[in-house]
Image (cartoon, rainbow, N blue to C red; front, side, top):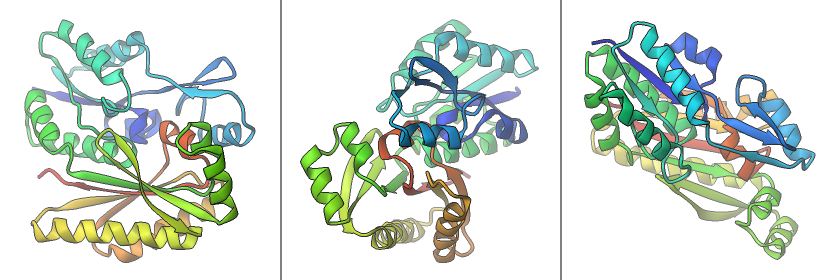
Amino acid sequence: MRTAIVTDSNSGIFEAEGRDLGVFVVPMPVIIEGKEYLEGVNLFHEEFYQSLIDNRELSTSQPTPGSVLAVWDMALSEGFDELVYIPMSSGLSSSCQTALMLAEDYDGKVQVVDNHRISITQRSGVLDALHLAQKGLTAAEIKERLEQAAYDSLIYVGVETLEFLKRGGRVTAAGAAIGTALNIKPLLIIQGERLDAYAKVRGTKHCKKREIEAMVNYADCLRQEGCAFRVGVAGSFLREEEDQEWFEMVKEVFPGEEVYYDRLTFSVSCHVGPGAFGMGISTKLM
C-alpha cells in the first residue's frame, strides 16, 4: 500500500515546500477586504503582515469542500492507494469535521486525523506521518498513532503588541491601554484546542526568556519519561534578522535536539499580530 500524506497550510508547510517533502497541501483561504487569497499560493507573509499593520478588513476561513477534494483526488490519481489528511485542530476550526464527512465517500481510502494541533506542532505531526508511512504503516494505523499522541505537544506564544488581541476581543480596550503603558507582554499557551493566557511579563526580552524557561522545563519532563521530541520555533517578525535572532536564541538552549523554524501561520498571526514569537515542543513517533 502506498500512503500519501496531506495537510493544510496551517501546518506552516506551503505548496512549494510540500513538493520537496512529498506532502500534498491544501492552502487556507484568507479574505482581505472582500477578496479571497490563498495562503502560500498568491499571499505570503510580507503582504499578510502589512495588511495587519494597515488595519485592513481581514479574516481567515476554512478551505471549501471542493478544494479539499481536489487535493485528495490529485494524490490518489498519482498512484497512491490511500491517504492521511492532517488538518488544523477541530477545536480551532470546523474544517476537520467537514473533512471527516467528506471522507465517508472514499470507502476508507481517506483517513482524517484530528491531532488537536496547529502551526509548528501540526508540522511535527506531518513529519511523524511521513516517517510512519515510510515504515509501511497503513493510513488507518497512522491515524491511530497520531491521535494517540495528539496532546503530547505544547506551544507558547509571546506578543509584541496588544492591539490584535484587543481587536479579537481577547483583551479589553482598557486592559490593552494599561498593558501598553506598562510594557506588559502576555505569554499565551496553546495545547489542543485551547488558547489561554499563561503569564504576563514586562518587556519583550523578559517574555522571551520566560517562554524559553517554560519550554526547557517541559523538555526536561519529556526526557525523564524517555521521550524523543522536536522543537519548533516560530515568529511573525517583519525583518529576517529578527527571525534569525529568535531562532538562534532557542537553538542555543537545545543543543543536540531537532530544532526547526517556521514563519507563524496566518490563522495564528491574525490574532497575535506582527512581532510575535512562539515555540512548540512535540514528541516524536518512532
